[in-house]
Figure 1 (tube, rainbow, N blue to C red):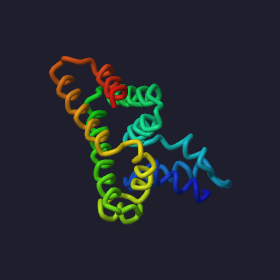
Figure 2: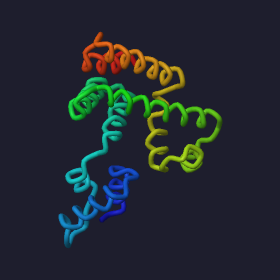
Figure 3: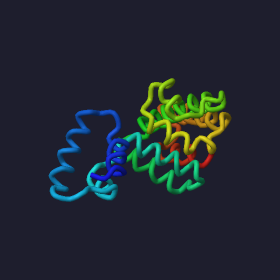
Length: 171
């Protein structure tokens, strides 16, 4: 496996050792006798749900709202509800908020951020790439929107896909 493929595998699997070894076994059987590359990882290892949510936020940060909406809708479809998606979005935004506060406080090294927040270094690196698109006020606004739409969903006052779209287009 190439070094970039190894890194990509770790990013895809996250911190779940059981899943890591399961995916590694699958890759070993698939790639017997050849060097596996990033494309092989993309083909065989499904992203974690948090990855799909992060990709949605990444698309939102880059101004690709239709892509962000499609990713978040797909997550809701797979989970059979938008409520867990709102929970994961809130978790991601809280993490961005923590990183933003450290970054603004002059802690800008990904390894130091990871250590202080007790997160994987690659998570800090990924978040630092989009942090400029999520200043403090925008991140707080995102959390307020999520709270409002979560409440409206639970009350039956809003369709779940409409709530996701509103979040994407208002943030």
